[in-house]
Length: 432
Image (cartoon, rainbow, N blue to C red; front, side, top):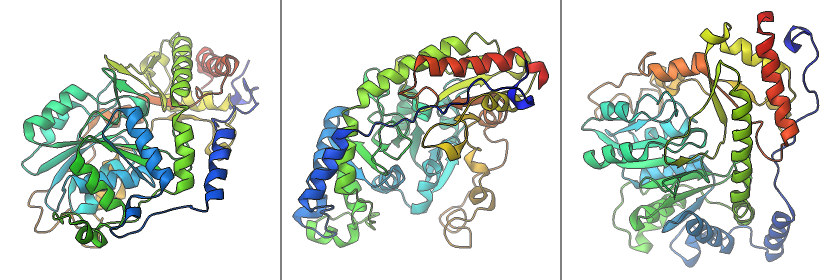
């Protein structure tokens, strides 16, 4: 027998089924909106329609009720939602925000839009979220907030990081883009900090094409998010809003069709998460039989929602590098329907540590002169050198791999093919 990467026959050639849960409910909801003739009902001025149309407002009520928060604010993306959140807490030039190096880039770059500088703290070795000890070490007199990312669907270390924030008088913004349905001590991810943000784009747990939702129990933060979402500068006078800090607004508005679809999708979340957890448990048990593989642990007190099913790889046990091993596994398997152009949904690592992006290495963000990294607002230089976060660099370069081949409607037979591919490569790894 030969490995597929060495010219042998792959374990499977039939594509994996798409994660596709658009059904009759969504079609009927879209038809209802089209029949109404109202595709959006926002006005960028102080008016009854400042808060959007009936579908948007209904989704916000439904979201707030499901997640057990006072306010939910629909936006056109999680990226927009994080920008709104950073603005709503009053971030300004000269501030610093502690961020994760292991996330989608907006989790680290959003402070730059308000003239603040991101400061990177390393990740936990087992859970991959922010390491509280490194967060504490990163705090200075300039720090305004911590952006905690629930990476892969794992809630951040709520007790430790929230305690740090309280001790230093900081806000916690929770990036829960990958974690709807995850919980800590029975409380939903996205509601664990001062303000949380969810994603509804096409490869998330539930989606409406593009979209996001911001959640908070703070009346003040919620209203500032709504203002930033919809042309704040044109609204504050009519509304009588006196605090003009960061009241330069945008068009971050969700459409009625997106809101109607998202409402249908939210009603499916519980069943999807339940199936996804069961699938991950099954694969963790199968792949855990391979000595070099360790499934990601779930934090005590937490429930994981598995946006990605992550593992650690020990090349000392395997006798081959992670990349060679995982590339060989991928060669044994096919692509997934509707995502054919993305290759087999198994990856070496996740993303390059964000401080290694050209933006941080060259310190060019707003304009060409290095603002906000340089200038009168910042008297100390933040370090973005390789080596500042050794755990994430090691994990990304050598240890972590993840896959998405556990998403419903995959069957046990589909997952057995995944496990069989890993077992084949393990058995024949001397061919690598």
